[in-house]
Image (tube, rainbow, N blue to C red; front, side, top):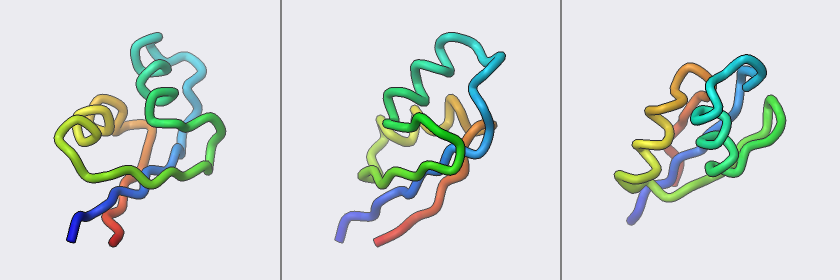
Length: 61
Protein backbone atom coordinates (compact mmCIF):
# COMPACT_ATOMS: atom_id res chain seq x y z
CA UNK A 1 0.00 0.00 0.00
CA UNK A 2 1.47 3.34 -1.05
CA UNK A 3 1.59 6.06 1.54
CA UNK A 4 0.51 9.59 0.85
CA UNK A 5 1.61 12.91 2.29
CA UNK A 6 -0.86 15.55 3.46
CA UNK A 7 0.94 18.86 2.98
CA UNK A 8 -0.50 22.03 4.57
CA UNK A 9 0.73 25.58 4.00
CA UNK A 10 1.08 27.22 7.42
CA UNK A 11 3.21 30.30 6.67
CA UNK A 12 2.91 32.98 4.02
CA UNK A 13 5.26 33.03 1.05
CA UNK A 14 5.47 36.84 1.21
CA UNK A 15 9.13 37.70 1.63
CA UNK A 16 10.25 34.22 0.63
CA UNK A 17 12.77 33.54 -2.09
CA UNK A 18 11.27 33.20 -5.57
CA UNK A 19 12.41 29.57 -5.72
CA UNK A 20 10.50 28.79 -2.51
CA UNK A 21 7.38 30.49 -3.86
CA UNK A 22 7.63 28.41 -7.03
CA UNK A 23 8.06 25.22 -5.02
CA UNK A 24 4.94 25.95 -2.95
CA UNK A 25 3.05 26.63 -6.17
CA UNK A 26 4.34 23.38 -7.69
CA UNK A 27 2.97 21.50 -4.70
CA UNK A 28 -0.44 23.01 -5.52
CA UNK A 29 -0.72 25.31 -2.51
CA UNK A 30 -2.07 28.84 -2.72
CA UNK A 31 -3.57 29.94 0.58
CA UNK A 32 -2.51 29.54 4.18
CA UNK A 33 -4.33 26.58 5.68
CA UNK A 34 -4.83 24.86 2.33
CA UNK A 35 -3.90 21.19 2.22
CA UNK A 36 -3.10 18.83 -0.61
CA UNK A 37 -2.51 15.09 -0.65
CA UNK A 38 0.44 13.92 -2.73
CA UNK A 39 2.02 10.52 -3.27
CA UNK A 40 5.04 9.82 -1.07
CA UNK A 41 7.83 9.82 -3.65
CA UNK A 42 11.44 11.00 -3.39
CA UNK A 43 10.61 13.93 -5.68
CA UNK A 44 7.74 15.13 -3.52
CA UNK A 45 9.85 14.63 -0.39
CA UNK A 46 12.51 16.85 -1.94
CA UNK A 47 10.00 19.59 -2.70
CA UNK A 48 8.66 19.45 0.85
CA UNK A 49 12.17 19.49 2.28
CA UNK A 50 12.97 22.67 0.33
CA UNK A 51 10.06 24.55 1.95
CA UNK A 52 9.86 22.71 5.27
CA UNK A 53 9.78 26.05 7.13
CA UNK A 54 6.52 26.98 5.35
CA UNK A 55 4.56 23.71 5.48
CA UNK A 56 3.56 20.89 7.78
CA UNK A 57 3.49 17.29 6.59
CA UNK A 58 1.51 14.28 7.77
CA UNK A 59 1.63 10.73 6.44
CA UNK A 60 -1.81 9.40 5.54
CA UNK A 61 -3.07 6.22 3.91
